[in-house]
Image (cartoon, rainbow, N blue to C red; front, top):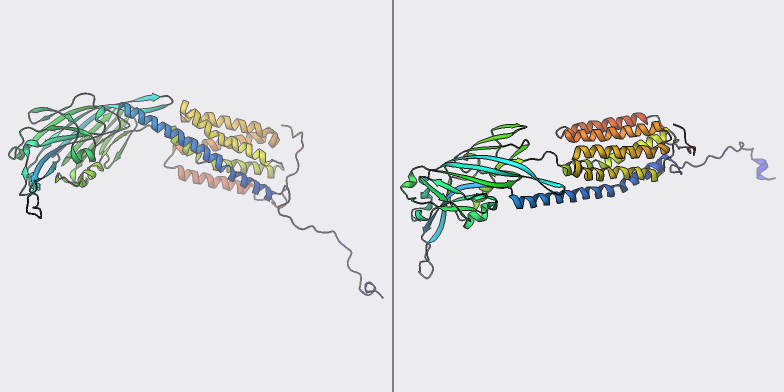
Length: 471
């Protein structure tokens, strides 16, 4: 007897259940993986676009520097600083001989210091690029109160009052428009170019003049001074708080100033016709005294770091704004691809990865359009042209892809809203992070709400009729 005759008959055979394949051809999981890989691949074109923007900005800065070198570099006015040489005995050598006396400078700053600066900026163009240059008239006045500063030289010092001189530093002395002189007491003294010793090394090239009639007795009374400088410069103008008390007034017809440096003005008036700024400073916040013995240059470096002034700010910098826009490039690609995938899933369409890629390239091309047009018509006009061109291109291309004009119009409207939101965020610099974060949260919420009922394991798009639905 066979074994089959003994065993009871089993249940009738049922249908064979195939194993679950999560990544079968056409599955949403495989499509998502392909889209993610495509997004990662677009890091390279976005990076290349950013690199092109950086190269153009470097070229712009180079041209601005060339214009400044021809007209006048950013100016910083230093001084006047009174320099009084003195000699002190040197230590005797080991063999008993006495070396020559050591010569050292005594630096004395003005007791009262006033500056009145008036600048007339204009723009100079070279090719596609422009730079801000200016002509400035500066009135420097005040008084020196030397007093007991000579005591800093020491009891054994021999002060050479006859060799005392004044130093006035100008960052770019080539741009001084006419010969400069200074009224010292009752004398009108012409400047000579050049700055000897550590003054020239630390504070830059400048001018000097010999001070006549200075003695230990005359040093005990206030000595007034005044000078007028007429010079050219570019981009910015800076001052230094050299006095025990400082009053600085700067005015210009430039409507967009930027005040920076070690001190901010106490009063400003800014309008469409220009600006006026006033600084009132004491010597307590600057980090160096009114007089000191030179030799190590430590106080001179502190002087250079106490500069303050005004920059002739250009509010529309197409390169910086284009670079900021390009930082959102990957976000635009992710957002657009997400819309495509939602159309594909919800409307049961089939969109090839190659079509995703062409749309992504169009989004990358936007930033090249933006850069090239911004150099011609400014950032705002270029942004409108680039947005219109890319949105129209994508809408026309996606009409046969998405099947109807309605879907293509919805996609175009969403892209236009996205570009408009980005432009608005760039105009609101202080609130850009807050509003951008809220916008991303709302966009993600909308995607989550739209896809909340989709069965992703069963959502396999069906082929589209080659003829396509009618509009």
